[in-house]
Image: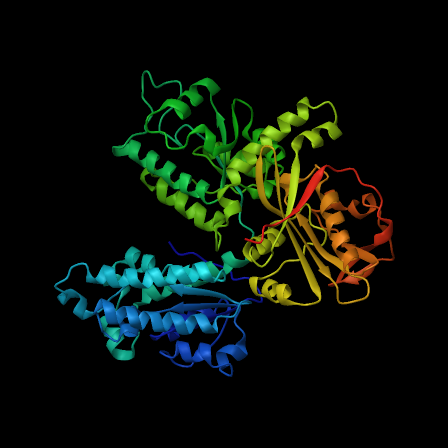
Length: 561
Protein backbone atom coordinates (compact mmCIF):
# COMPACT_ATOMS: atom_id res chain seq x y z
CA UNK A 1 0.00 0.00 0.00
CA UNK A 2 1.52 3.33 -1.06
CA UNK A 3 1.35 6.13 1.48
CA UNK A 4 1.87 9.82 0.92
CA UNK A 5 3.55 11.51 3.86
CA UNK A 6 3.69 15.28 4.08
CA UNK A 7 6.78 16.66 5.74
CA UNK A 8 6.39 19.61 8.10
CA UNK A 9 7.17 22.89 6.29
CA UNK A 10 10.52 24.39 7.14
CA UNK A 11 12.04 21.16 8.47
CA UNK A 12 15.41 20.45 6.87
CA UNK A 13 16.47 16.82 6.43
CA UNK A 14 19.79 15.13 5.72
CA UNK A 15 20.51 11.52 4.77
CA UNK A 16 24.07 10.30 5.41
CA UNK A 17 25.23 6.80 4.56
CA UNK A 18 28.25 4.66 3.76
CA UNK A 19 26.49 3.37 0.64
CA UNK A 20 24.99 5.14 -2.39
CA UNK A 21 21.73 6.89 -1.43
CA UNK A 22 21.51 9.33 -4.37
CA UNK A 23 18.22 7.90 -5.65
CA UNK A 24 16.61 8.02 -2.19
CA UNK A 25 17.74 11.63 -1.77
CA UNK A 26 16.18 12.52 -5.14
CA UNK A 27 12.91 10.94 -3.99
CA UNK A 28 13.05 12.85 -0.71
CA UNK A 29 13.67 16.18 -2.44
CA UNK A 30 10.28 15.90 -4.15
CA UNK A 31 8.56 16.27 -0.76
CA UNK A 32 11.04 17.95 1.59
CA UNK A 33 14.02 20.26 1.84
CA UNK A 34 16.92 17.81 1.82
CA UNK A 35 20.67 18.24 1.84
CA UNK A 36 22.30 17.09 -1.38
CA UNK A 37 25.10 14.75 -0.35
CA UNK A 38 28.70 14.75 -1.47
CA UNK A 39 28.98 11.13 -2.55
CA UNK A 40 28.86 8.45 0.11
CA UNK A 41 31.09 6.61 2.57
CA UNK A 42 32.22 9.80 4.30
CA UNK A 43 29.41 10.19 6.79
CA UNK A 44 31.77 10.62 9.75
CA UNK A 45 33.93 13.17 7.93
CA UNK A 46 30.90 15.29 7.11
CA UNK A 47 29.73 15.16 10.71
CA UNK A 48 33.15 15.94 12.16
CA UNK A 49 34.11 18.76 9.76
CA UNK A 50 32.36 21.96 10.97
CA UNK A 51 32.98 23.57 7.56
CA UNK A 52 31.30 20.81 5.52
CA UNK A 53 28.34 21.62 3.30
CA UNK A 54 26.25 19.36 5.57
CA UNK A 55 26.76 21.73 8.51
CA UNK A 56 26.29 24.78 6.27
CA UNK A 57 22.89 23.37 5.26
CA UNK A 58 21.83 23.10 8.92
CA UNK A 59 19.64 19.99 8.88
CA UNK A 60 17.08 19.79 11.69
CA UNK A 61 16.86 15.99 11.43
CA UNK A 62 19.71 13.80 10.21
CA UNK A 63 19.23 10.17 9.19
CA UNK A 64 22.30 7.93 9.33
CA UNK A 65 21.59 4.72 7.40
CA UNK A 66 24.59 2.45 7.78
CA UNK A 67 25.38 -0.81 6.00
CA UNK A 68 27.16 -2.98 8.56
CA UNK A 69 29.10 -5.07 6.05
CA UNK A 70 30.71 -1.95 4.55
CA UNK A 71 31.43 -0.49 7.98
CA UNK A 72 33.14 -3.74 9.06
CA UNK A 73 35.01 -3.90 5.73
CA UNK A 74 33.90 -7.55 5.56
CA UNK A 75 35.64 -8.43 8.84
CA UNK A 76 33.17 -10.82 10.47
CA UNK A 77 35.19 -11.75 13.55
CA UNK A 78 33.13 -10.57 16.59
CA UNK A 79 36.10 -9.21 18.56
CA UNK A 80 37.56 -7.02 15.82
CA UNK A 81 34.07 -6.18 14.48
CA UNK A 82 33.08 -4.96 17.93
CA UNK A 83 36.17 -2.74 18.06
CA UNK A 84 35.27 -1.17 14.70
CA UNK A 85 31.76 -0.45 15.96
CA UNK A 86 33.13 1.08 19.15
CA UNK A 87 35.29 3.47 17.12
CA UNK A 88 32.35 4.45 14.89
CA UNK A 89 29.96 5.13 17.77
CA UNK A 90 32.71 6.89 19.72
CA UNK A 91 33.34 9.26 16.81
CA UNK A 92 29.63 9.87 16.27
CA UNK A 93 29.00 10.61 19.94
CA UNK A 94 31.57 13.42 19.97
CA UNK A 95 29.96 15.35 17.09
CA UNK A 96 26.25 15.13 17.87
CA UNK A 97 24.73 18.54 18.54
CA UNK A 98 22.15 18.88 21.30
CA UNK A 99 19.90 21.16 19.25
CA UNK A 100 19.54 18.63 16.40
CA UNK A 101 17.71 15.31 16.05
CA UNK A 102 19.44 12.16 14.76
CA UNK A 103 18.05 8.86 13.56
CA UNK A 104 20.65 6.08 13.35
CA UNK A 105 19.66 2.85 11.66
CA UNK A 106 19.64 -0.52 13.28
CA UNK A 107 21.22 -3.02 10.96
CA UNK A 108 20.81 -6.01 8.68
CA UNK A 109 24.05 -7.79 7.79
CA UNK A 110 24.02 -8.80 4.11
CA UNK A 111 26.71 -9.96 1.73
CA UNK A 112 27.69 -13.09 -0.20
CA UNK A 113 30.05 -14.37 2.50
CA UNK A 114 27.24 -14.51 5.09
CA UNK A 115 25.90 -17.62 3.36
CA UNK A 116 29.30 -19.33 3.85
CA UNK A 117 29.51 -18.77 7.61
CA UNK A 118 29.85 -22.11 9.42
CA UNK A 119 28.67 -20.41 12.63
CA UNK A 120 24.93 -20.10 12.09
CA UNK A 121 24.58 -17.52 14.86
CA UNK A 122 27.39 -15.22 13.70
CA UNK A 123 25.15 -12.94 11.63
CA UNK A 124 22.71 -12.40 14.49
CA UNK A 125 25.57 -11.91 16.95
CA UNK A 126 27.17 -9.15 14.87
CA UNK A 127 23.80 -7.42 14.43
CA UNK A 128 23.29 -7.65 18.18
CA UNK A 129 26.65 -5.97 18.85
CA UNK A 130 25.50 -3.01 16.76
CA UNK A 131 22.11 -2.93 18.48
CA UNK A 132 23.66 -2.87 21.95
CA UNK A 133 25.81 0.14 21.08
CA UNK A 134 22.94 1.93 19.37
CA UNK A 135 20.60 1.49 22.32
CA UNK A 136 23.32 2.68 24.71
CA UNK A 137 23.80 5.84 22.64
CA UNK A 138 20.03 6.49 22.65
CA UNK A 139 19.98 6.22 26.44
CA UNK A 140 22.82 8.71 26.73
CA UNK A 141 21.60 11.13 24.06
CA UNK A 142 17.89 11.95 24.21
CA UNK A 143 17.98 13.50 20.73
CA UNK A 144 19.06 10.21 19.11
CA UNK A 145 16.44 7.73 17.87
CA UNK A 146 16.64 4.25 16.36
CA UNK A 147 15.70 4.17 12.67
CA UNK A 148 13.99 0.80 11.91
CA UNK A 149 15.97 -0.14 8.81
CA UNK A 150 16.04 -3.82 9.71
CA UNK A 151 12.25 -4.06 9.82
CA UNK A 152 12.04 -2.55 6.34
CA UNK A 153 14.36 -5.27 4.99
CA UNK A 154 12.51 -8.05 6.82
CA UNK A 155 9.12 -6.93 5.49
CA UNK A 156 10.39 -7.02 1.91
CA UNK A 157 12.67 -10.05 2.28
CA UNK A 158 16.30 -10.20 1.15
CA UNK A 159 15.48 -11.11 -2.45
CA UNK A 160 13.22 -8.09 -2.88
CA UNK A 161 15.16 -5.65 -0.70
CA UNK A 162 18.70 -6.00 -2.07
CA UNK A 163 19.97 -5.77 -5.64
CA UNK A 164 23.30 -7.43 -6.40
CA UNK A 165 23.24 -5.97 -9.93
CA UNK A 166 22.84 -2.37 -8.69
CA UNK A 167 25.44 -2.95 -5.99
CA UNK A 168 28.13 -3.93 -8.46
CA UNK A 169 27.11 -1.16 -10.87
CA UNK A 170 27.24 1.74 -8.41
CA UNK A 171 27.31 0.65 -4.74
CA UNK A 172 23.50 0.97 -4.64
CA UNK A 173 22.56 -1.75 -2.19
CA UNK A 174 18.77 -1.49 -2.19
CA UNK A 175 16.42 -2.28 -5.03
CA UNK A 176 13.89 0.23 -6.35
CA UNK A 177 11.02 -0.81 -4.07
CA UNK A 178 13.22 -0.81 -0.97
CA UNK A 179 14.49 2.68 -1.82
CA UNK A 180 10.92 3.94 -2.17
CA UNK A 181 10.00 2.36 1.18
CA UNK A 182 13.09 3.92 2.77
CA UNK A 183 12.06 7.34 1.49
CA UNK A 184 8.52 6.91 2.90
CA UNK A 185 9.88 5.80 6.27
CA UNK A 186 12.22 8.79 6.52
CA UNK A 187 9.39 11.21 5.73
CA UNK A 188 7.10 9.46 8.21
CA UNK A 189 9.66 9.78 11.01
CA UNK A 190 10.26 13.43 10.19
CA UNK A 191 6.52 14.12 10.28
CA UNK A 192 6.19 12.31 13.63
CA UNK A 193 8.75 14.71 15.14
CA UNK A 194 6.53 17.71 14.45
CA UNK A 195 2.91 16.50 14.69
CA UNK A 196 0.64 16.35 17.74
CA UNK A 197 -0.35 12.67 18.17
CA UNK A 198 -3.83 11.49 19.08
CA UNK A 199 -4.41 10.50 22.71
CA UNK A 200 -7.42 8.16 22.95
CA UNK A 201 -8.47 5.03 21.06
CA UNK A 202 -12.21 4.34 21.47
CA UNK A 203 -13.21 0.73 20.80
CA UNK A 204 -16.40 -1.10 19.98
CA UNK A 205 -16.73 -4.63 21.41
CA UNK A 206 -18.83 -7.08 19.37
CA UNK A 207 -17.06 -8.17 16.18
CA UNK A 208 -14.33 -5.65 16.98
CA UNK A 209 -12.47 -6.76 20.12
CA UNK A 210 -13.95 -10.23 19.84
CA UNK A 211 -15.95 -12.11 17.25
CA UNK A 212 -19.67 -12.62 17.80
CA UNK A 213 -22.09 -11.03 20.24
CA UNK A 214 -21.89 -10.66 24.01
CA UNK A 215 -24.95 -12.20 25.65
CA UNK A 216 -25.30 -14.88 22.96
CA UNK A 217 -22.33 -17.03 23.99
CA UNK A 218 -24.52 -19.83 25.34
CA UNK A 219 -25.65 -20.52 21.78
CA UNK A 220 -22.72 -19.10 19.81
CA UNK A 221 -19.52 -18.64 21.85
CA UNK A 222 -17.60 -15.45 21.09
CA UNK A 223 -14.51 -15.81 18.92
CA UNK A 224 -11.53 -15.26 21.21
CA UNK A 225 -8.94 -17.99 21.63
CA UNK A 226 -5.49 -19.24 20.67
CA UNK A 227 -6.77 -20.91 17.51
CA UNK A 228 -8.15 -19.96 14.10
CA UNK A 229 -10.46 -16.93 14.00
CA UNK A 230 -10.32 -16.46 17.76
CA UNK A 231 -6.55 -15.95 17.58
CA UNK A 232 -7.07 -13.01 15.21
CA UNK A 233 -9.02 -11.12 17.87
CA UNK A 234 -6.60 -12.11 20.61
CA UNK A 235 -3.67 -10.83 18.54
CA UNK A 236 -5.59 -7.61 17.87
CA UNK A 237 -5.94 -7.16 21.63
CA UNK A 238 -2.23 -7.83 22.08
CA UNK A 239 -1.43 -5.01 19.66
CA UNK A 240 -3.81 -2.66 21.49
CA UNK A 241 -2.27 -3.60 24.86
CA UNK A 242 1.16 -2.62 23.57
CA UNK A 243 -0.29 0.70 22.45
CA UNK A 244 -1.76 1.23 25.92
CA UNK A 245 1.60 0.49 27.56
CA UNK A 246 3.15 3.20 25.39
CA UNK A 247 0.72 5.88 26.49
CA UNK A 248 -2.39 5.47 24.32
CA UNK A 249 -5.53 5.89 26.42
CA UNK A 250 -8.19 3.28 25.72
CA UNK A 251 -11.94 3.67 25.96
CA UNK A 252 -14.97 1.50 25.22
CA UNK A 253 -17.98 2.84 23.30
CA UNK A 254 -20.26 -0.13 22.62
CA UNK A 255 -23.95 -0.95 22.37
CA UNK A 256 -24.39 -3.90 24.72
CA UNK A 257 -26.00 -4.93 27.95
CA UNK A 258 -23.25 -3.84 30.30
CA UNK A 259 -23.43 -6.97 32.46
CA UNK A 260 -22.94 -9.25 29.43
CA UNK A 261 -19.98 -7.25 28.14
CA UNK A 262 -18.33 -6.96 31.55
CA UNK A 263 -18.65 -10.70 32.06
CA UNK A 264 -16.44 -11.24 28.99
CA UNK A 265 -14.04 -8.41 29.88
CA UNK A 266 -13.54 -9.72 33.41
CA UNK A 267 -13.79 -13.49 33.06
CA UNK A 268 -13.11 -14.73 29.54
CA UNK A 269 -9.87 -16.76 29.75
CA UNK A 270 -8.47 -15.31 26.51
CA UNK A 271 -9.34 -11.67 27.15
CA UNK A 272 -6.11 -9.65 26.98
CA UNK A 273 -7.67 -6.24 27.62
CA UNK A 274 -9.08 -6.40 31.14
CA UNK A 275 -11.25 -3.55 32.54
CA UNK A 276 -8.36 -1.82 34.31
CA UNK A 277 -6.61 -0.90 31.03
CA UNK A 278 -9.52 1.30 29.94
CA UNK A 279 -9.54 4.93 31.04
CA UNK A 280 -13.27 5.29 30.28
CA UNK A 281 -16.20 3.03 29.40
CA UNK A 282 -19.63 3.62 27.91
CA UNK A 283 -21.42 0.29 27.47
CA UNK A 284 -25.08 1.10 26.88
CA UNK A 285 -27.64 1.66 24.14
CA UNK A 286 -27.23 5.42 23.79
CA UNK A 287 -26.06 6.92 20.47
CA UNK A 288 -22.31 6.51 20.24
CA UNK A 289 -21.61 10.13 19.39
CA UNK A 290 -23.30 11.16 22.65
CA UNK A 291 -21.17 8.67 24.59
CA UNK A 292 -18.03 10.02 22.92
CA UNK A 293 -18.94 13.56 23.94
CA UNK A 294 -19.36 12.38 27.54
CA UNK A 295 -15.98 10.65 27.53
CA UNK A 296 -14.31 13.77 26.13
CA UNK A 297 -15.78 15.77 29.02
CA UNK A 298 -14.84 13.09 31.55
CA UNK A 299 -11.21 12.99 30.39
CA UNK A 300 -11.14 16.75 29.79
CA UNK A 301 -9.79 16.28 26.26
CA UNK A 302 -10.71 17.83 22.94
CA UNK A 303 -12.59 15.66 20.45
CA UNK A 304 -9.67 15.97 18.03
CA UNK A 305 -7.66 13.78 20.45
CA UNK A 306 -9.87 10.74 19.72
CA UNK A 307 -9.74 7.85 17.23
CA UNK A 308 -12.89 5.71 16.95
CA UNK A 309 -12.59 2.03 15.89
CA UNK A 310 -15.83 0.17 15.06
CA UNK A 311 -16.78 -2.63 12.69
CA UNK A 312 -20.15 -1.04 11.80
CA UNK A 313 -20.10 1.24 8.70
CA UNK A 314 -23.29 2.90 9.95
CA UNK A 315 -21.81 3.75 13.35
CA UNK A 316 -18.59 5.03 11.76
CA UNK A 317 -20.52 7.25 9.35
CA UNK A 318 -22.73 8.68 12.10
CA UNK A 319 -19.71 9.59 14.23
CA UNK A 320 -18.05 11.20 11.20
CA UNK A 321 -21.14 13.33 10.58
CA UNK A 322 -21.92 14.24 14.19
CA UNK A 323 -18.34 14.61 15.47
CA UNK A 324 -16.13 15.60 12.53
CA UNK A 325 -13.22 16.34 14.90
CA UNK A 326 -12.98 12.62 15.79
CA UNK A 327 -10.76 10.51 13.52
CA UNK A 328 -12.59 7.43 12.17
CA UNK A 329 -10.31 5.00 10.28
CA UNK A 330 -11.68 2.44 7.84
CA UNK A 331 -12.25 -1.03 9.25
CA UNK A 332 -10.64 -3.92 7.31
CA UNK A 333 -12.96 -6.09 5.24
CA UNK A 334 -11.12 -9.31 6.12
CA UNK A 335 -10.81 -10.05 9.81
CA UNK A 336 -7.34 -11.60 9.45
CA UNK A 337 -6.11 -8.08 8.66
CA UNK A 338 -7.32 -6.70 12.01
CA UNK A 339 -4.06 -6.90 14.03
CA UNK A 340 -2.02 -5.37 11.20
CA UNK A 341 -4.62 -2.68 10.54
CA UNK A 342 -4.42 -1.69 14.21
CA UNK A 343 -0.64 -1.47 13.93
CA UNK A 344 -1.14 0.95 11.06
CA UNK A 345 -3.60 2.99 13.17
CA UNK A 346 -0.91 3.26 15.83
CA UNK A 347 1.79 4.34 13.37
CA UNK A 348 -0.47 6.84 11.61
CA UNK A 349 -2.15 8.53 14.58
CA UNK A 350 -0.43 7.70 17.88
CA UNK A 351 3.26 6.91 17.33
CA UNK A 352 5.74 9.31 18.95
CA UNK A 353 9.46 9.78 18.36
CA UNK A 354 10.06 8.81 21.99
CA UNK A 355 7.87 7.40 24.77
CA UNK A 356 8.29 9.17 28.12
CA UNK A 357 7.63 7.88 31.63
CA UNK A 358 4.52 10.10 31.69
CA UNK A 359 3.22 8.36 28.57
CA UNK A 360 3.60 4.92 30.14
CA UNK A 361 1.76 5.97 33.30
CA UNK A 362 -1.10 7.71 31.50
CA UNK A 363 -3.93 5.22 32.13
CA UNK A 364 -3.16 5.10 35.84
CA UNK A 365 -3.12 8.89 35.92
CA UNK A 366 -6.57 9.15 34.37
CA UNK A 367 -7.92 6.46 36.69
CA UNK A 368 -6.62 8.49 39.62
CA UNK A 369 -8.32 11.53 38.12
CA UNK A 370 -11.64 9.69 38.23
CA UNK A 371 -11.07 9.10 41.96
CA UNK A 372 -10.40 12.84 42.37
CA UNK A 373 -13.70 13.60 40.67
CA UNK A 374 -15.52 11.30 43.08
CA UNK A 375 -13.87 13.09 46.00
CA UNK A 376 -14.98 16.43 44.59
CA UNK A 377 -18.58 15.23 44.39
CA UNK A 378 -18.52 14.16 48.06
CA UNK A 379 -16.59 17.14 49.45
CA UNK A 380 -18.62 19.78 51.24
CA UNK A 381 -16.93 22.70 49.46
CA UNK A 382 -14.37 23.48 46.79
CA UNK A 383 -11.94 24.65 49.46
CA UNK A 384 -12.46 21.44 51.42
CA UNK A 385 -11.91 19.41 48.27
CA UNK A 386 -8.57 21.13 47.58
CA UNK A 387 -7.40 20.58 51.15
CA UNK A 388 -8.27 16.88 51.02
CA UNK A 389 -6.33 16.38 47.78
CA UNK A 390 -2.99 17.09 49.54
CA UNK A 391 -1.38 18.43 46.36
CA UNK A 392 2.40 18.72 46.03
CA UNK A 393 4.13 20.50 43.12
CA UNK A 394 7.82 19.73 42.64
CA UNK A 395 10.08 21.98 40.57
CA UNK A 396 12.28 19.64 38.50
CA UNK A 397 15.42 20.19 36.44
CA UNK A 398 14.29 20.96 32.86
CA UNK A 399 17.61 19.74 31.41
CA UNK A 400 16.94 16.27 32.81
CA UNK A 401 13.48 16.22 31.28
CA UNK A 402 13.97 18.13 28.01
CA UNK A 403 12.00 15.61 25.98
CA UNK A 404 8.94 15.92 28.24
CA UNK A 405 9.35 19.72 28.27
CA UNK A 406 9.11 19.91 24.47
CA UNK A 407 6.23 17.44 24.44
CA UNK A 408 4.33 19.50 27.02
CA UNK A 409 4.81 22.81 25.20
CA UNK A 410 3.92 21.35 21.81
CA UNK A 411 0.90 19.24 22.81
CA UNK A 412 -0.90 21.55 25.25
CA UNK A 413 -3.64 23.71 23.74
CA UNK A 414 -6.22 24.64 26.39
CA UNK A 415 -3.99 25.83 29.24
CA UNK A 416 -1.43 27.49 27.02
CA UNK A 417 -0.99 31.24 27.28
CA UNK A 418 0.85 31.79 23.99
CA UNK A 419 0.78 28.41 22.12
CA UNK A 420 4.36 28.70 20.93
CA UNK A 421 5.89 25.46 19.62
CA UNK A 422 9.51 24.35 19.88
CA UNK A 423 11.73 21.86 18.12
CA UNK A 424 14.10 19.78 20.23
CA UNK A 425 16.94 21.90 18.89
CA UNK A 426 15.29 25.21 19.77
CA UNK A 427 14.63 23.98 23.29
CA UNK A 428 18.24 22.83 23.69
CA UNK A 429 19.40 26.34 22.78
CA UNK A 430 16.86 27.94 25.10
CA UNK A 431 17.97 25.78 28.03
CA UNK A 432 21.55 26.97 27.54
CA UNK A 433 20.61 30.66 27.19
CA UNK A 434 21.77 32.73 30.16
CA UNK A 435 18.89 35.21 29.74
CA UNK A 436 16.11 32.59 29.90
CA UNK A 437 14.69 30.83 32.96
CA UNK A 438 12.80 27.60 32.39
CA UNK A 439 10.48 26.24 35.08
CA UNK A 440 9.17 22.67 34.98
CA UNK A 441 6.88 21.05 37.54
CA UNK A 442 5.58 17.61 38.43
CA UNK A 443 2.37 17.38 40.47
CA UNK A 444 1.15 14.64 42.80
CA UNK A 445 -1.62 14.24 45.35
CA UNK A 446 -3.12 11.63 47.65
CA UNK A 447 -4.37 9.61 44.68
CA UNK A 448 -1.09 9.39 42.79
CA UNK A 449 1.54 11.07 40.65
CA UNK A 450 0.37 13.10 37.65
CA UNK A 451 3.92 13.31 36.36
CA UNK A 452 5.45 16.42 34.80
CA UNK A 453 2.47 18.57 33.87
CA UNK A 454 3.42 22.26 33.85
CA UNK A 455 6.11 24.48 32.32
CA UNK A 456 6.93 28.15 32.04
CA UNK A 457 9.64 30.18 30.31
CA UNK A 458 10.72 33.62 31.51
CA UNK A 459 12.63 35.95 29.19
CA UNK A 460 15.01 37.84 31.50
CA UNK A 461 16.89 39.72 28.79
CA UNK A 462 15.34 43.10 29.71
CA UNK A 463 14.82 45.04 32.91
CA UNK A 464 11.38 43.48 33.39
CA UNK A 465 11.25 39.68 32.87
CA UNK A 466 8.40 38.34 30.72
CA UNK A 467 6.61 34.98 30.94
CA UNK A 468 6.68 34.07 27.25
CA UNK A 469 5.28 30.58 27.83
CA UNK A 470 3.06 29.05 30.49
CA UNK A 471 1.40 25.67 29.94
CA UNK A 472 -0.28 23.10 32.14
CA UNK A 473 -1.76 19.70 31.30
CA UNK A 474 -5.54 19.66 31.17
CA UNK A 475 -5.63 16.72 33.59
CA UNK A 476 -4.62 18.95 36.52
CA UNK A 477 -6.72 21.97 35.60
CA UNK A 478 -9.41 23.27 37.94
CA UNK A 479 -7.51 22.91 41.22
CA UNK A 480 -5.85 26.36 41.43
CA UNK A 481 -2.45 24.70 40.97
CA UNK A 482 -1.49 27.45 38.54
CA UNK A 483 -1.75 30.01 41.36
CA UNK A 484 0.92 28.14 43.34
CA UNK A 485 3.19 27.72 40.32
CA UNK A 486 3.03 31.38 39.32
CA UNK A 487 3.72 32.38 42.91
CA UNK A 488 6.77 30.09 42.95
CA UNK A 489 8.08 31.75 39.77
CA UNK A 490 7.38 35.21 41.17
CA UNK A 491 9.22 34.33 44.38
CA UNK A 492 12.24 33.05 42.44
CA UNK A 493 12.47 36.18 40.29
CA UNK A 494 11.97 38.49 43.28
CA UNK A 495 14.83 36.74 45.10
CA UNK A 496 17.00 37.33 42.03
CA UNK A 497 16.43 41.08 42.30
CA UNK A 498 13.57 41.75 39.88
CA UNK A 499 10.76 44.02 41.08
CA UNK A 500 8.23 43.44 38.29
CA UNK A 501 7.03 40.59 36.07
CA UNK A 502 5.02 40.64 32.87
CA UNK A 503 2.87 37.97 31.31
CA UNK A 504 1.62 37.49 27.75
CA UNK A 505 -1.68 36.07 26.56
CA UNK A 506 -2.25 35.38 22.85
CA UNK A 507 -5.83 34.14 22.22
CA UNK A 508 -6.43 31.07 20.06
CA UNK A 509 -9.46 28.93 19.28
CA UNK A 510 -8.52 26.53 22.08
CA UNK A 511 -7.10 28.52 25.00
CA UNK A 512 -10.20 30.43 26.15
CA UNK A 513 -10.03 28.73 29.62
CA UNK A 514 -6.98 30.86 30.47
CA UNK A 515 -8.05 34.13 28.85
CA UNK A 516 -8.58 35.78 32.27
CA UNK A 517 -5.79 34.03 34.16
CA UNK A 518 -3.52 37.02 34.67
CA UNK A 519 -6.47 39.12 35.80
CA UNK A 520 -7.40 36.52 38.40
CA UNK A 521 -3.78 36.49 39.56
CA UNK A 522 -3.92 40.24 40.22
CA UNK A 523 -1.90 41.43 37.23
CA UNK A 524 -2.59 44.86 35.72
CA UNK A 525 -3.46 44.94 32.03
CA UNK A 526 -1.21 47.10 29.81
CA UNK A 527 -1.60 48.23 26.23
CA UNK A 528 -1.62 45.31 23.75
CA UNK A 529 1.51 44.61 21.73
CA UNK A 530 2.38 42.63 18.63
CA UNK A 531 4.27 39.45 19.57
CA UNK A 532 5.44 37.04 16.84
CA UNK A 533 3.00 38.64 14.42
CA UNK A 534 0.03 38.22 16.79
CA UNK A 535 -1.83 40.79 18.86
CA UNK A 536 -1.01 39.92 22.46
CA UNK A 537 -2.52 41.01 25.76
CA UNK A 538 0.21 42.20 28.13
CA UNK A 539 -0.06 42.10 31.94
CA UNK A 540 2.25 43.25 34.72
CA UNK A 541 2.58 42.87 38.48
CA UNK A 542 4.86 44.40 41.12
CA UNK A 543 6.49 41.47 42.86
CA UNK A 544 6.45 43.23 46.22
CA UNK A 545 2.65 43.57 46.05
CA UNK A 546 1.45 40.09 45.06
CA UNK A 547 -2.15 39.58 46.30
CA UNK A 548 -3.23 36.65 48.42
CA UNK A 549 -4.46 33.74 46.29
CA UNK A 550 -6.55 30.77 47.34
CA UNK A 551 -4.71 27.49 46.77
CA UNK A 552 -3.59 24.47 48.79
CA UNK A 553 -0.39 23.27 47.13
CA UNK A 554 2.92 22.41 48.77
CA UNK A 555 5.93 23.46 46.65
CA UNK A 556 9.09 21.35 46.74
CA UNK A 557 12.43 21.20 44.92
CA UNK A 558 13.55 18.07 43.09
CA UNK A 559 16.15 16.01 44.94
CA UNK A 560 19.69 16.61 43.68
CA UNK A 561 20.30 12.84 43.44
